[in-house]
Length: 126
Image (tube, rainbow, N blue to C red):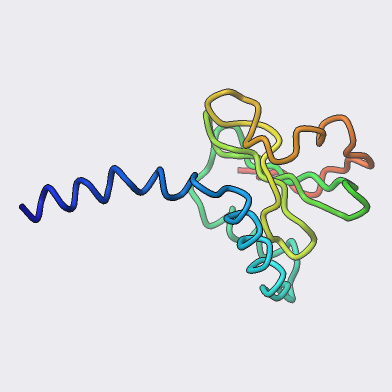
């Protein structure tokens, strides 16, 4: 019986997570705003990626200007994973590409058209 209850909860979790996407997004933004910026900036993300096993293709971090702010696009380590855009405080904003469809998470569909001032910050040399 416990197993059936457990399985029912597991089946309901995706429905609960997608039931109110606007509320979920607002809650995530509120939580992100409360998260302090790491003092070491983008160097913390580079150190995090260097601690991972070598990726193929290699990790890359690109800086852009998007919606009036400096953002960083961090490439995923492999296929079917999101390439994530972070704000200057390294809070995830969206994923303009990657995933199963290659079109990201749909949260910033205009990123490729509106992001400017592209500059390579770091590429994993391994």
